[in-house]
Length: 402
Ligand SMILES: O=C(O)CCC(=O)C(=O)O
Ligand SMILES: [Fe+2]
Image 1: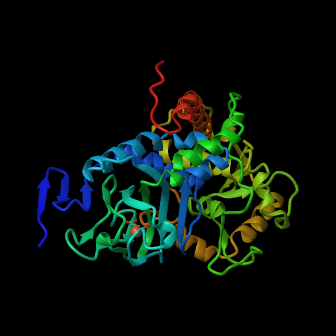
Image 2: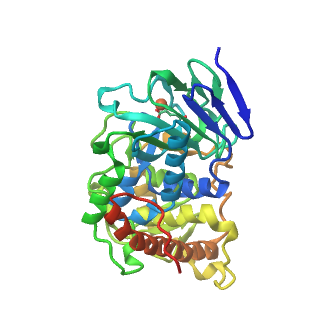
Image 3: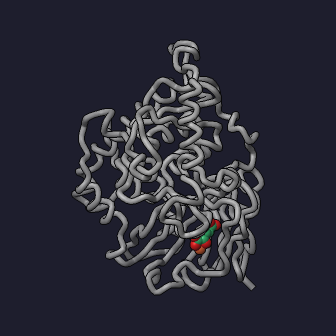
């Protein structure tokens, strides 16, 4: 029989093989990571799974978005080292936001159960949203010992050894989107994520020219097409960026002449946002930029002050029938299977029309401006931290003063 102690928010096994921490992350930290994931994720490694890795953020000119992860990663590593009593150097092997949508599940496994995963020593999973609220299904189970089952709750964290002492599984997600921040830790310095990130950061063209430097750039190969079949020609399935916008009640308009045959190069073209029969005036650099601004509106909209912004009619015009035809054409191409797209990205609590976050065009204009301020501040922090990171060859919170 295993011995269990309850200590405030901490439940720990006397054998120190797993630890469950309540409220490890604040709701605001969870919301910020959710914003990053919903604006930057790519198609993941298993069916109905989507992921955002730090390497992907750097590779798409969004390196500044790794900043919110830095203090959290540090806190997680300290906690793992303390709890498991590590008297050796530990490295982060992988940091990622991972979301599971309807149909995703994983059977019994340990996290080091493949020859190429043997370097994994410990796992930390932070839940960024809650069972029964943002998603259904998705309960976590340990095969042996206590606790048997964990109901994911926003802000909670579970840490365990990656070996066969912690065989676990996750039930199929039945609706909504289950989101986690997942880290693996290793003793093997050749798998140090920091070294890989620093090497990629030194190749990227980070500079001080705001705001251009904050604009996301698409990756060199397409990572946004979701299809249940292996479909290299984009004939079935859907584009996940378009699908997320669609789930929130938007469409996309390309102001210049294009055809879907240019996909995925369409990712580098200017776009405008459509809602109902209105077209937002502002042109965005590309779909990724537009998605970041819309997700920023979802995150911050209610707090944003738009009193200095003009009335809604100053920001959007009537969408002409000709342009509406163009919108419809691209929609049918980007969402070959719109029923599947809706079932994958419909939120467990939404009204189905994406109206929950919608506060009008002036708010969207305010969000576009506030997104730029947000990104600029993070980019300055990144540039200020970089020389320290390079000197120590590790990524940590640098106090930059004022
Ligand atoms: O998200 C979870 O609760 C655990 C996921 C998992 O087992 C894995 O990614 O290996
Ligand atoms: Fe696992």
